[in-house]
Image 1: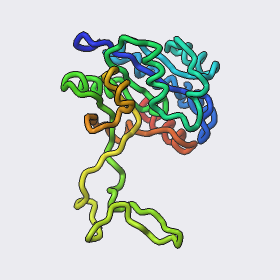
Image 2 (image 1 turned 90 degrees about the vertical axis):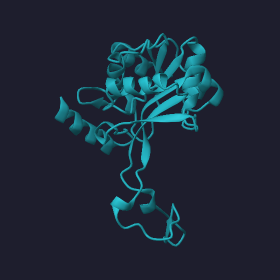
Image 3 (image 1 turned 180 degrees about the vertical axis):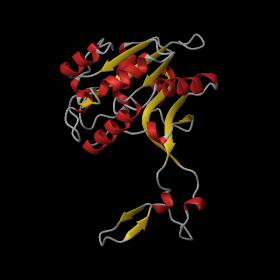
Image 4 (image 1 turned 30 degrees about the vertical axis):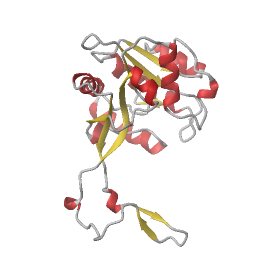
Length: 229
């Protein structure tokens, strides 16, 4: 709870991940991937309830072992490859009403800390924001990004009158890192997205912003965790 407002954390973890099979319960530095997010959530000063939304019995059992609640199994139609990411969150707040704020914590961000969760919540609540999401500085400016046409020629993403050659001349840009999403629950039910013109940003450092999407990401995360534990 924060300033008298209740906060629900939702950790979505479907069983059918494709890039890294059974990703959410793959071992990472001695524990399942999802455990890192559950444990960070448990250390938060503000989360009143931590639930895992899954359709998968094995993931549910692993989550219970690490102290998360499984108050329902997610309908399988909300666990497909093409299911929008917001749908499991909206399903969760319909099943568990009366929380003032909802926090989405994706299990693919194992380096996120409890302090990141809390600072994002604080920013949302203290400033009266509708939503706040975590971001990190982009590796490359958009002026250095291109699409390829059918002849494999470069087509700039951002048209520019003069080629940008020095990083120092590039604007500071940020990307979503997928670690923390916070929103007023009733507002989220209406907007059906954490990302609108009303969304504020909480900036996280690169070293805590790794999003697990491949086997290489798992190896990188393992090395980073080895260095900090």
